Length: 537
Image (cartoon, rainbow, N blue to C red; front, side, top):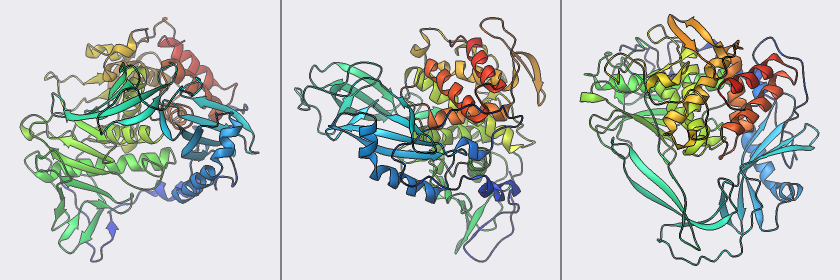
């Protein structure tokens, strides 16, 4: 893969072409969050259905500096917010994010503590009108947070963290949270969180914190990168997008490795034989994802703070996967079989970065139905970024991993139009869905997104044929991909919580459609009908 840019003598970011659309983002950004808002939420009053997709401002966005100010202001009034919510005297709120939408509605996301202990599953989002009136609250749990004692009856390892566990609908209990680090069977790092009752020792919950995904590489053709000059030549540092850097792990499995550099700003040769090629794909995919977040969603980076993650390529030996790790705020990519087919395409970069986005917003727990929604969010926005990139060598589609040929027969890893075609994923919801691996329970949400965007039945998009069924035999008409991903993002960023399941996702997306397009809108009707079409009622 060849990339050529014009050298500069100063240490500044440069590129052969700047996206014109990015210059217009500022005009779509909401002016600022109201000072003094103690709690934040949306005014869900109806408005006329829009013929066009919503603007980034309607989705709710704050420039990073205003976001920081808004968080500080909200935290200063967190005690007032707790009283307004009628929380107990021993509970406190910690502000994670504040989002203001185009109508002045403020959405504030909180974590909760009890006697200074973190409450797992206690997160909530408040929604306040432009006038500051609390309208509604979305909670991870409706249970009253209270325990008889915060003194454990059982000892735990020195590394264990004392918490209140309020997840999955049960009564809150004092618990120990431990983290066991290791390596999964395929070489992926492992960080298993286990929560046990501090009184009885009963295991309450366990989940894997390393979030994985797969995609293709070496299929984006000749691309443009933003690089930075240095005394040694050029480096893969993107000064236009938060300072995103790309490193070569040199087949290692820890640390950052070496920053990828070059002496003439022409990177890679398009094959796995050249070590720079994987770095080019990863750097390019991260840039396209950043641009999508900013242009299509009005979001300033993964966490909304204007700061970039970083990418690591050439992880391990023959590692056929990629993953996001919150602890390093980074994406990591293996080289595939024979270390010659790195998993670093547009869609896989977007998939991994979106795990970071999910962590920074709803924090969907990576287990059960919430884990399936977490994975689906990465597939949904990964596919959306692939369409957004408009790359002739890797056209947008609703197939996941279609280029890597991981099955050896040319078939993709996952299908959004009919997920069960992969032999493992679910097309429709049932009561056992949460028992599936999260990459397979994600099928229902992936199917929902495809149906919402494109409709049911046969259709050809960018030369790919699709045929999407419904659980009840209904015929659905899509509302378009842009509206579909805007509704999903709005639901993720201001309505979903860490424990949202499929029923909760239906409620969240219906709220999002109402907020964006109105209570009498065709978009809201389509969201409801589509969820019914995948048996989420």
